[in-house]
Length: 350
Ligand SMILES: Nc1ncnc2c1ncn2[C@@H]1O[C@H](COP(=O)(O)OP(=O)(O)OP(=O)(O)O)[C@@H](O)[C@H]1O
Image (cartoon, rainbow, N blue to C red; front, side, top):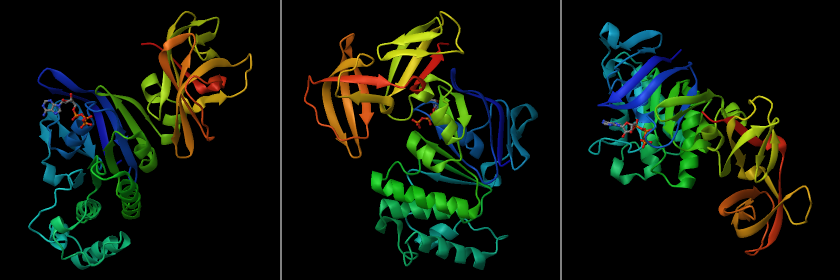
C-alpha cells in the first residue's frame, strides 16, 4: 500500500471538514478524489502531505506510520517522500526550466540518469529545447508539464495533484491530462488527484473516491461508480439527470416518467429516483405506453441533442433528455418519452 488512512476526522474550529475517513491507495494506482466544492478534498490531500496536522486517526505511507496524534507521531512534510502539483504550477520565476526541475533532485539519486529522464520526459511532451527558458515565457500548458516533471524528478513514492488542470482551457486540459496519465503510469508512481470533474476522474483514475460533506460516499472503480452508484448524489454526478421523490407501493415506484420496479426496498419507504438524461428516449410518434411531453427547447451538443421538456402532469419542472440522434423541434412540439425500467436508479431516503 502506498497510502492508508484510518478513522480520520478533521475540524476547523467547530466546523467538521472530514468525517470517519478510511481509504487506501495501492502501489501504481491513480485515485481520484471527486466531489463538490467544500466537501473536504483539499483538506484530505493536505493531511496526507503533512501540511495540515492529523487531529485523529492514523496515516501510513509505504507501510510506515507517519501521523498518529494519539501516539504523538507527526512526520514533517519534507520527510514524507511526497510530490505535489497544484493548479497554479508554482514554478520559481527566477529559475530556468532546467533549474526548476533539477532543484528537487536528491544527492542519493543517480543524477546523470535522472537528468536523462528529465530530458526524455520533456521530449515525450513536445517540450524539447525549452530547458533554458524561464517560466514566464511558457504557456500555461507548458508550465503545467514542467510542474509535473519537477514533482516527479525526485522520485517521490506518491504524487498528490490538486485540481492540476483546472486553469487550462478544455482542449489543452484533455491533452495535458493524457500526457500526465502516461507519465504517471510509465514512472509507476501512485497518485491521488483532486478533481470536481467526474469525467476527468473517470478518464484518469483506477479508482474514484466520491466525497460529500466531509464523508466518503463511494469508493470504487470508475465503471462501478457509474453503473452501480450507491446513492442519489453519485447517480446524478455523471451528466445531466432528473430527480424525483416517491415511495414504494407493492414493489413499485411511481414517477412522472413511469412506474419502476424495486425489489430491495421496503414497502412504503420514501425514495429518491434518478433518471439520467441519456436514458430517456424521445419519440416523435405517439404510443400509449409512453409519457407525453412538450418541447421547451432543443440544443445541438455535438454528437448529441439535449432536450428541455415539460410534462403536463408537472408543468413547473424541466425534464432533461439526451439523444444520440440529431433533432430539431420547435417550442411546444408534442413528443413521447420512454425510460427502460433498469435505467431508473432508486434509493431509499436516509
Ligand atoms: N484553513 C481553513 N480554516 C477554516 N476552514 C477551512 C480551512 N480550510 C478549509 N476549510 C473549510 O473546510 C471545508 C472543506 O474544505 P476543502 O478546501 O477541503 O474542500 P474542497 O472539497 O477541497 O473544496 P474546493 O473544491 O472548493 O477546493 C470547507 O467548508 C472549507 O470552508
